[in-house]
Amino acid sequence: MKRLLIIGMLTFLLACSESPKTPVETSQIVVESFYQRKNSKLKEYTTPGLYNSYMAVQEQMTNGKNGSSNFQLVKDTVYTDTAWVKFTSAYADRPETFKLIKQNGKWKVTETGLRERSPL
Image (cartoon, rainbow, N blue to C red; front, side, top):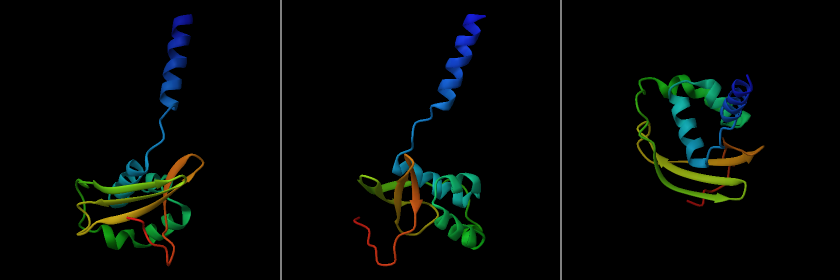
């Protein structure tokens, strides 16, 4: 009985101890969840303002685009709680850049300010 309890507790701890995603992993999740319309995952990895913006344009931007994302990192930069990730994907003709911020220990893709420039 003790063994079952210990095995159960270890299984529970391992299931709950998902390591935090890197900015690159988070960017790939956002790209793929946007085009595959996995909106609960998209909401989890974006800030509320960006999520609302994505929802407004998702229908027009995702028509006819499906399949593998072929996400490829071009360059990334991390400054404490802000990161920039430049990448290519099968969904766009040229590289895109995401700005990410760390909220509650988790990276989230956010909006780029009006006059804000990427360091990449």
